[in-house]
Length: 108
Image (cartoon, rainbow, N blue to C red; front, side):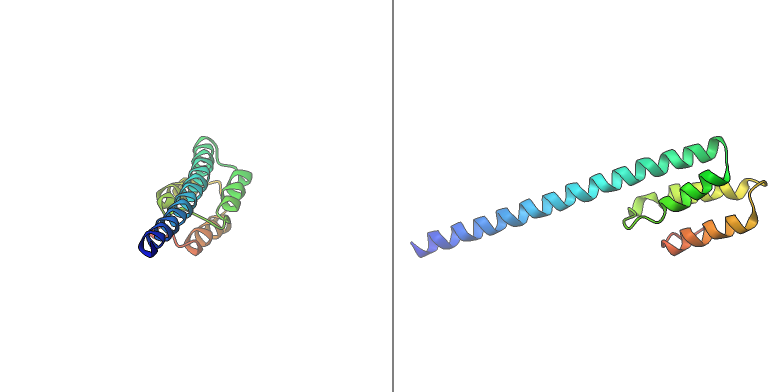
């Protein structure tokens, strides 16, 4: 009888752990997808026409608390688009570079 109660307790504990981990995974994945989608739209808008407002919007998007690890390439692409444009102020390019480096994205 005790063994049966113990196995039921263990089964319930593992079920709760599985539910919590699944919930955390789904939340993290959906949050990363939302961030990735918006970043993609911002980089696409930068590729069409680079303006100071778009650069500031891109920089403000980098202030998010959670940045997925797989968006590093897209951040670098956004920086390269801004870096290639001759009409953008060098000080703004430097601020963008510092912002990206401060988020842990290297190689730019």
